[in-house]
Image 1 (tube, helix red, strand yellow):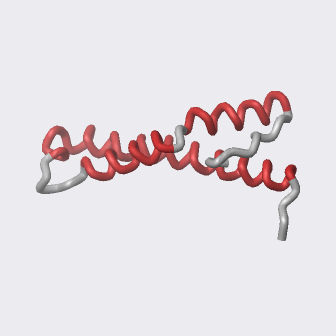
Image 2 (cartoon, rainbow, N blue to C red):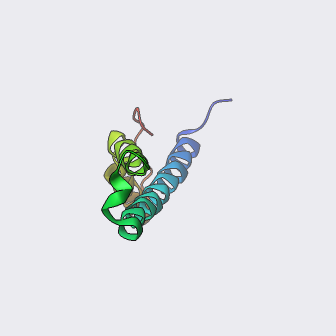
Image 3 (cartoon, rainbow, N blue to C red):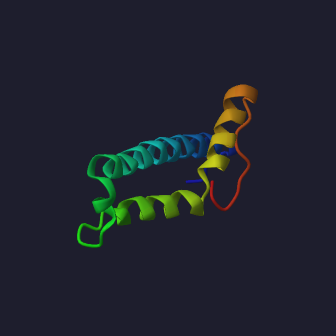
Length: 87
């Protein structure tokens, strides 16, 4: 089944929204781990730093800033994102 340009754009908006929310919540949760546990949370014994590091790498690979831009452009200008490798 082929998607129309509008259907594809709406899918891209839904995906961008999910990535923005997951990034914001994920970084908040992993940051709070360090606030609650202190410096000992970074020791290799616990490995909690791995969660923050993996999430941060994920967010930088396909930058969430581009997703926020696409979402804002859709909300403010009713413009769906252009097709790209990441959308």
